[in-house]
Image (cartoon, rainbow, N blue to C red; front, side, top):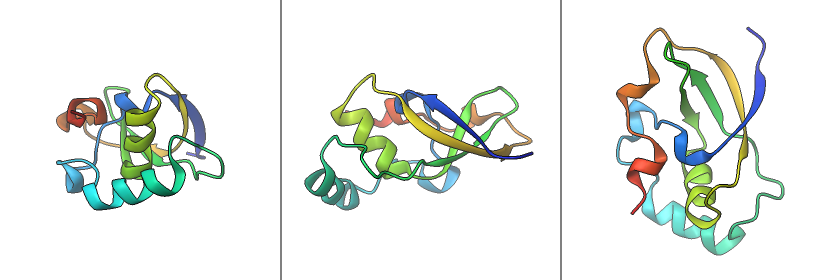
Length: 99
């Protein structure tokens, strides 16, 4: 499957099983200081599509969290690089992990 760019609210993206607690707080704070809510020059996070149609990030958890936190409702480009053999809803979304 060739990759595809989709625009989604980052709050709806599921975190990978390796990041069940969400973005690293220190890294998130650094990104907020450096970039604020700006998406200028931001590389699109990569995600897989689950069998339920939901997206699970493989990289870019901190970038997506920063935008979800500072610019609620803003859609970001996400590069869908493949399909999972399981539903993505087995992990929480970024929105579930935001205070």
